[in-house]
Image (cartoon, rainbow, N blue to C red):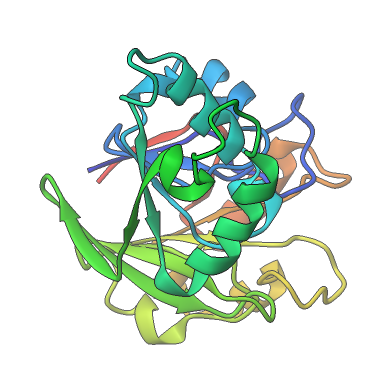
Length: 244
């Protein structure tokens, strides 16, 4: 299994330092599609037309703000029009609100019969599925008062997505964990904070990579040193690839 982080930053990162936390699994499943996706695909030399599947974890712009770009780019670059759509993997609880969002932002075509969610994407509701040799299981996380989801891959790799709460029910059974992390010293009530994760058992920290962060007043090297010195597996860089 291959996981490539197109970016590893939070919603507010600058392109000069990072991109938002969207990742590509096995060169075919894009985990989230934020507003920086155009630049991060270019940075990582990935053609938008090669994106087969897009998983949507929740409805914040750093996770869905690039869907318009993907949908329009693939629709209008194919002939006949619309022959090369990405399959949009949408947890059932998100479908109605995602449809309303895309109906506003993608109502921009002479063909008024196109319904955005299913006109520019092939929409699939999933809880659990397998693509090639990888099994995908959706888990619900506690992020805001809206639904949010992470993924477990092959029952052994956890990608938390955005979560403000620890996911203690899953850590022990995982071989590798990619965990949402906020390094600020104040409680923001939206993301898990470093000092909370740092209290976990060393056996859990030693298999945990941290991502979805802001550098703040640190350099990447300074934050990486802090993370490694406390026993974590690593701090994810943009463009970093993992073979698991």
